[in-house]
Image 1 (cartoon, rainbow, N blue to C red):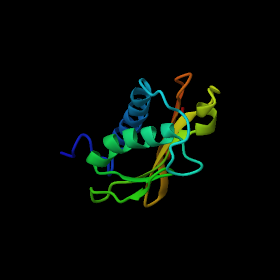
Image 2 (cartoon, one colour):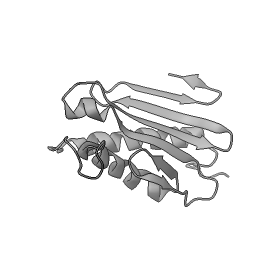
Image 3 (cartoon, one colour):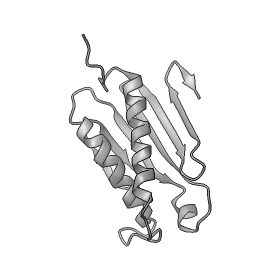
Length: 137
């Protein structure tokens, strides 16, 4: 019997993990006070770093690879696991200026290309997801 949470073959498991990663960003922002520049790069905000860390803390132990706009590439530790392409805080300039249009965007990519994707509006809470061959919702 296959592993009920096999991220190498089960799109439902991956979809769940990507939604959990977005939830981790929500949780990380609950106590965030500093939304301004991170000091790490000219175009990087403290909120970018916090969101990136929250995603890595969830996805890395599960074996995913992560390619993040904020921290670069971390190879998968689980053989056959997809790489999740991430913009931890899409619209970070908006967030830093208290403009209510920003999201977390994640897409698991396998050998055949984009496989499972999740975008979560971090202000309104709207969620959009898609699985290759199944469509979007």
